[in-house]
Length: 422
Image 1: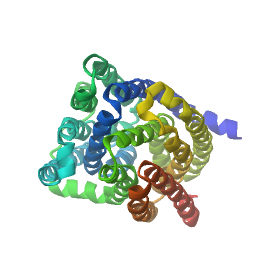
Image 2: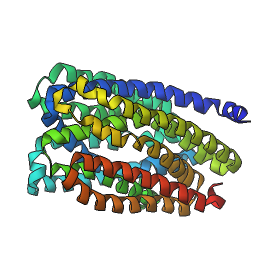
Image 3: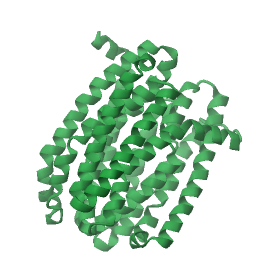
Image 4: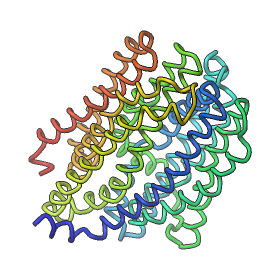
């Protein structure tokens, strides 16, 4: 029976494997770039890059505003209605553009008045184009219309064009600003390529957006934005807090461990989510029984894959100081703690995004949001206790315990709303 069900979704599984291959290329280049930057910039220089990326990720978070889930779901459900699809597209673009302006203004104020931000200001400004690129890339649209393969090709092409420039131009510690800029330009390049593709294929036709339409899209996405904003409390805020208590060298070691862990999760989990989230969302309206069956299959697949990811982090951690150099001695201690995180991220993601959001309704989406609000509150409490005391180790403990809490609450809420989701 399970084999038959898998065959029923052969196209989606092929898409997922295809995306994993593309993500492999997408992640291989950064994984080559990451140790190169760690070595050339040293722990101190890489600390500047890591801090600036964490700050800019906050702006990206604001501009995304949860649209990667809410707009993807709405586009997937109306993809055969051209007028409605175009209307949603342009209203989301208007909303994201306004959020870009507002968040950039706030960043400008912080750079003027906060000393720690002034210390990292050059790297932060060099990374800012990432926000612009993210605003006009439209991944949510490509997912919704079932062209996620094409988007991944664009993203891969951008990295192939831009990232090799790092090996040419970044040679020493003082090149951290250029390193930050080149990484940001990947997002700008993807935005340019995706806009050209949309124009040439006539996938979107102009319908004037309205303030009312933008407000509707913001309202639909707000619960999901709160959940992602809460997530950033233990993914990005902990890095910023760490910046007030540790040296740039320790910042470099911690952010390196964190990015290795998240790169592995991105490589393995994100392709599955990109393929199956819109599929489950659409089936939830067309045939709930098929959507539930697909959910169970994906759950088993994700758990298996993420267990392997956790084992890879735990066993591979001790090898990294030999590869990266003496500046990174001790990075394996962070990875020993973080090895549990991929398993929790995978299980929490399936029960949350594919369960409560894709299979559920507004009530379960609210529960999804509340999980992250609770997790964020607990995380903030832990980080202000553990980070000043244990610094990088404390940050690692905060991140891992929070992911475990998210997983536990997602499973609890999914079972609580079984009458809706199952």
